[in-house]
Image 1 (tube, rainbow over the protein chains, first blue to last red):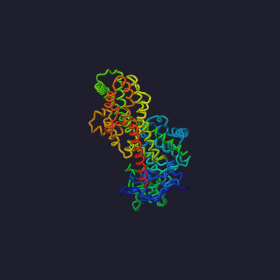
Image 2: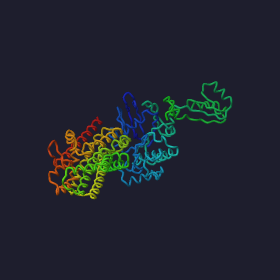
Image 3: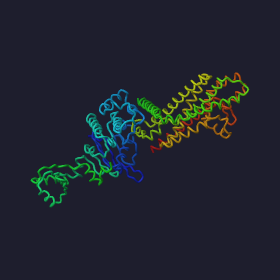
Length: 304
Length: 303
């Protein structure tokens, strides 16, 4: 697969603040790429440089093999959803989408055809004629996403796209994006602090204080940075004695015994050695929360 | 093809900007404050003030009520248009509103040239002003048709030219200011200031002739004053011609001077062509300044 986004040694400082500090990563065509970090970590700054809103201090950025120094060839292939809506509140949904679509050279016929797809997928028919500021937060977000996709871009950049969306709408949005990924090979670059969104990405970059602190697939990251757990629901009491005599950390909550291991291999060995003591168990992989905590020393949830 | 596509983008962006202005009731109403003030003042006391001023100048002659009404009506609508073409131009700009609502960021990530976007703001600003000015002109013509209509085709062309050139002048001036503005506070401040002040300094609320000598000299240096006098001539030349049937030429000259239908620049009478040249050259100079500012800004950003 070829790189559709390539970032090399990117730096952006605001005075003494190192918003982005020498980061490099690449995004493959067609993949879902998650950019994970707390507010102020440097995610939005990186994206703003990628789409030409901000100028970089140093480093190189290529989108679709074009340098961001000439955005004219990049912008037709990009759709972006910003953290908060930048559409016209006083105009109707239809007018907002029509005026924006025309900036991409779409004919009226093409616009109507593309719009029909999204109206159907996101159930927009009842709100098309409504003024944007009369819509709920979730409805506005849907319109933002349609605006970003109407011209059928190669790359969709989502900057915290589902913040404030109810679970049903969030699922609706993701179902549609996944369908587009399958049918059009759409590349999705996502910044988020929702673990469930990051954990389904093909690749994840964790950024903290403007620097990349970890990167890889969710599985790789979990294997490298998160612990595995054996949850024992039914067990022999001797298991407690074994654990007390070893250095293996564990905790008991009600009837459930949760034993923490550095990795899957360690858990497997312990299980084989003590299999007679376990009666009802579950082996759980560490979550992306654990990965984030492990690499940044910070809880992601506290920032949401 | 590329040029065609950019022209299409310009058309849609301009339409979007015009629609946004007319949809935003608050912005729309603020831009109409000056003409509304003028109409209220006219109904409450300006009409009778103009009438008694006119009668005092023409004392001893018998003027038809129809001529008096056409004169005061013409004076009112020339004032309304002279001010509206500037105040609406100042208050109907979408450039800063887009900066405030961050819609400008959406355009930055869209494949549209900055010059196209900039031009769309100017064109929308101009067309919004023209739409309102021509609506006001229509209302004015209907009113005058009811009370007394003496406007010839040439006078009408003079008014239309006045509307176009004054709106263009106001639009370019406003866009020069908006280029350096990013906050709602500045926009509101400038709009209020222009709406409140412009009516006075262009001689819309009271004739320049009745101002102090120093003030008269000051306003004769402002291009807007020449536009006002152009509107006065368009609306009132016909009435003056009709008055000339019964009044001596000295009295007509008195009326023309006292009601700004003639302008004097430091003692020299300015002809109609002179008025047209002053306002046209001022607009061209402003356009040059605007283009220069944008070119400098573009190069500064690139560097």
